[in-house]
Length: 280
Image (cartoon, rainbow, N blue to C red; front, side):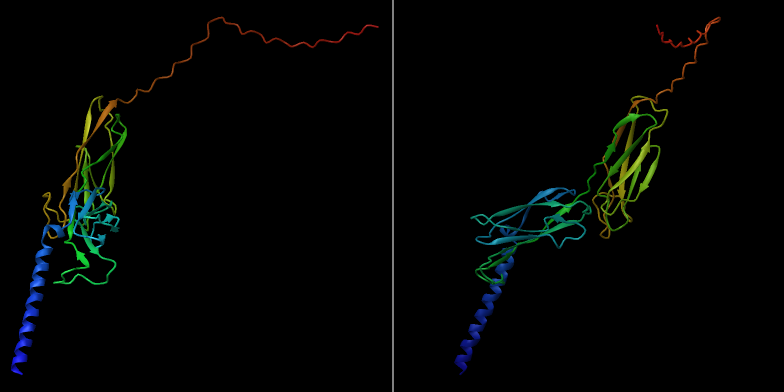
């Protein structure tokens, strides 16, 4: 009886050791490069299209999902991809407009053999579902401003607009042309616009440089640094308005010339009616 119990204990020990070894192997495999996702590029402003690529998915179907993202998103949010014969695959995603700068699009992917319902468990020598390591695309601000029009007459108006000035901490756009400063609250997607007037005394060839900064509440205005999860400020690329003409001088209407002395108005001719003549 003791001999049987000893054999049983040895078997349990062996099984436990094998399971632990399998778990360790799984953990090590998860850190290997072939189970990572490759993002190209891995950062950029809203509107950027990036590719997600992976491998080691032989005979399965890959589901790519970005639903775990917060304050940032990409389209499509979920998509299925059929790998090639070598198990490699790739798909393109586009960062959505309104994604908050310095936040991340979280990309998850799973390779699943749809002919089986088995899950990928630690120590499984032939996994049917492979979860890739998550990858992160960092959303950057877009420093581009639009100037409409880019040139014009002294005294005229021009508009400046920008975007990606959005977060959860009351971002404001601070815009100035060197003479007038404006503080503007962007809309929910981070877009804003402002209007400036060219001075009336501006000369042809004069330029007006417009500068702007997006600053979040609590920001220390140090680019690229986060404090308490809040995005920092960033500067937009300046834009330049050029004066191409001065205001037109209004013309004075010419005075009517006096009539010549002694001029006689022609008498109006009196119309006459011809009478019919009868002969008898």
